[in-house]
Length: 357
Image (tube, rainbow, N blue to C red; front, side, top):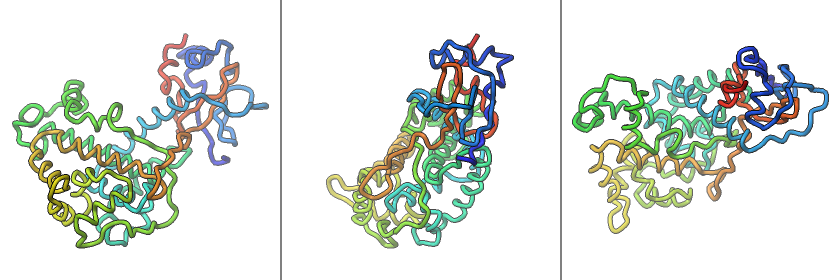
């Protein structure tokens, strides 16, 4: 861990918020004072206190959960800032083709010359630039699989708010938020309340879960699972069945399988009871209703993003991937903090610190 040099400032706000010990006590129940000391430790620890004899790392699940929530909130914002010129449909396609080989592991970046990845090279390059900018701020680089799985939901959230606000031609104006173009803030509380009543699944806090901690591929995947040009409905159904994704997810995602619309047309022919064709037709009928088709898309997409390291299993997400262990002396012990190179402020990370005496 020699490269993990934490720039955490454990005592950066002691003068303003009181002793670190009071803050730590609020979070961990400790009462003894902690030394106000910040050290960049070669072992990857952000240390407050005596470093001569550190006990074994042993932080609580609550500390892990807090750190991951803070990191995810920060990451969502950074992804939104960096990927301003990527369409959510392209982001979904790149992610589904990545998962479609049997694992959501970022292998698509090695497969851009294959037919199923046609047209995705430019999208992958934009991701690469975004990842470079984000990695520059982190002690632990962002995984490709995690970036590819997270970004579509961020982009869907952004674009669908624009649609609901009537700023695009996605819906008739009579179906939009104010029955016309809404020029207010898309972060306005009243707007978001109305938006999430219809698009609740894309809510970052209460919608479908966002899971991080995937292992990244280091080479191209086989790719033979993904249906080729001219594939029929059965080929697509067999593909999803092999991956362990519900066949019902085909209809919402089909438009993102290719750039020609061939997959969607093939699935329309799958008639009969329980056929995918009826679900495609249902989506077409419901397209004018804000949030209805989008809800099906995000549920289907989230199902695909839980794929594991092979086609027969589900991924074991490493909850510790984006954490730096932090030891606070004075009876506090181990905590976990996000992997930020700079600006790590315990008072901003944990609300309990703000009210410390």
